[in-house]
Image (cartoon, rainbow, N blue to C red; front, side, top):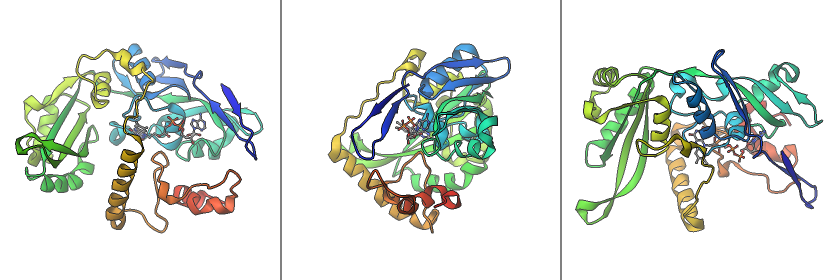
Length: 323
Ligand SMILES: Cc1cc2nc3c(=O)[nH]c(=O)nc-3n(C[C@H](O)[C@H](O)[C@H](O)COP(=O)(O)OP(=O)(O)OC[C@H]3O[C@@H](n4cnc5c(N)ncnc54)[C@H](O)[C@@H]3O)c2cc1C
């Protein structure tokens, strides 16, 4: 662990956790200790190397860091069955502001509760986490169905909103909505909705569930692919079938689009937020800590007081933000 001091007043330090990346899997008692500087990809890789019937319910992107992800919650394709990554943390090693090294017993249940969803940065530095591995079947099934706007897609999305949360807990279906070029229509832009799914079981079981509960989507046997859980991790991360697992150890992330594209995307997000405002939490409008919402407010200066921070703090922590 390295700390960088700055000459800013008041001074602050940045702690680099890159070298804290060890992972110890204990298949016999279905637990693991994972250090905060490891990535999700490294964790999934390490589990798969030791067991074909265990996994961990955390986020989809392999390059995400364990420290921020676990402390802010962490959801992925197994969220319906096993909850968040934070729900599956059973102990942690934390260094507090006094330099004391604490575990679950010595930090107490309140602090242990806070670092599992409240974000680590407010409470100390979490060096490592003890997690409960979850059981996955040797065969899981995935599918992806792309629908353009003219394919009764609006009705399907509407139906999905009512069906998705009632489906079997082994079945996860997410929507990815994006604009694409329509080759047949002179590259005109159109919206495409992708129904992207993981099922913890065989394709036959999946087909039967889908035909009973969501027949409107029209899932066919040839659209389903059976694979191992770790292959499904690669599938959701966008890698082609047959890709070596070693790619999960790659820490390089490329950001290509630059400031203009980033501003455009933030503008889209603001339009979406504005449209969705009527359906989501308000007074205060709340947010998932791991998807920071710039419009909830940020600290303007390094020496912001608790009183000033209350403006955004209550929106993330609700009644748990005490001034
Ligand atoms: C490409 C991408 C894909 C994502 N996919 C998902 C997803 O599928 N599901 C999901 O739930 N989220 C997802 N996220 C959001 C992700 O969970 C958050 O961005 C998370 O905060 C990342 O943690 P980090 O450690 O990598 O980031 P950092 O920026 O290093 O840390 C985030 C915050 O946590 C604090 N922190 C980090 N480590 C520690 C520690 N050891 N002790 C105390 N505080 C610490 C930092 O100070 C900072 O405030 C995704 C993010 C990206 C960029």
